[in-house]
Length: 211
Image 1 (cartoon, helix red, strand yellow):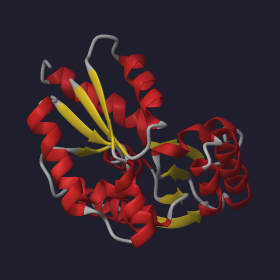
Image 2 (cartoon, one colour; image 1 turned 60 degrees about the horizontal axis):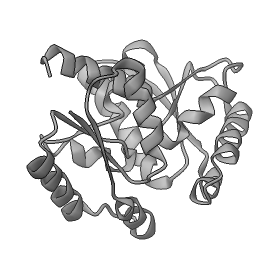
Image 3 (cartoon, helix red, strand yellow; image 1 turned 180 degrees about the horizontal axis):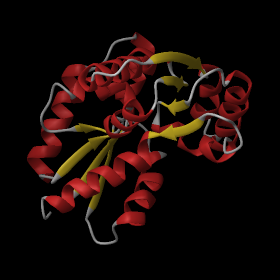
C-alpha cells in the first residue's frame, strides 16, 4: 500500500490518477491535514509536533509500505523522520544531475527556502555546481485558495513566460503547480514538477521491494 499525506483535498484526485497511470493494482490511501499548511502560512513556522504525531499515527494504524508527503513546505521535516518520504526529492535528484542553471518557481513563501535548500543540499551530495534563480509566483496563490485551479495554473504559466530568464530548467516547487505545465510547453526552459516524477519513482521502489 502507498499512502499520501496532503495539506489540501484537491490533491487526492490528481495523485490517484498518477498512481493508476503506472500501477492499477496497488492499494492507495489518502490523508488530508489542511491545518498543517494553514499554520505554516499564518505563523511562518512548521507545526512540527503535530506533523510527527500525524505521521506516527498513520504508520501505527495503517502500516503503509510507503508513506509520501505531498506538501513541499513540510518536506524538510520528512528528512528528520524515517517513516515518511518527501514527494520532491526524486525530481530534485534528477534536476541537479542534469542541469546547472535552475529556476525554482513557488506560490507560497513557506516553500521558497525549503525548496532552495533541497536543491542546494542535493547538489552538495552530488558534488555539482549549480546556479539558482528564484521565481516568485505568490500572487497566484489566492486563486488556489479560492478553488479556481484553472485561473491558478494559467496565472502561474503567464508569469513564468514573462520571467523565464537564463535558466535551463524551471522546477515547479509545489504539487499544486503541476497543472501549469500544460500551458508552458512552448517556452525554452524545460518545466518539471514533483508529483508524476515522484510517484513513478516511489512505485518503482515498491516494485523492487516486491510490495
